[in-house]
Image (tube, rainbow, N blue to C red; front, side):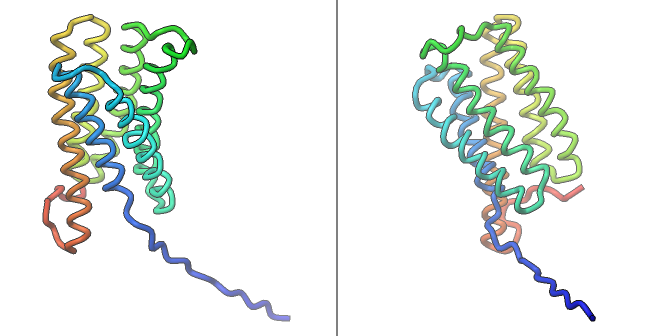
Length: 196
């Protein structure tokens, strides 16, 4: 008796999640680093952006990247989404009597480990495009500067990190805009550099 097998091909028609993830990361990074640069205090606007746009939106983008079989996008967006959620928790939980406040040493360690992780991801971008290389290179530097500022207690380093973080977030916004507009127009509107 012959067996008949049918193969069903399922086409993925889901949206490209990269612009959402890059915008969520970029806008939240710019707003936090305007604070780090000394333009305004750390207030509920930054915390809300960290929870919902930097955090939740990036996690959603990462889940969508899994469907696209994009391991790099999946890892990056979900990781940085939870970075934002954990950063807000670090700041808010002590106010709810759920743990001791963070110290410069523990915050420096937190930022340092994220810098190491980001440096690893940077090497992955060397096989992607120049825009992502710049996002991850500047983000790696940002984490190391922020960690150095915490460990040393030097506010000048924290302010320099803030300006560098504004640049990092701006590059991420540009990369998100390029992904979005290039797809919408079906041509290169904003270049992101060649795939390596």
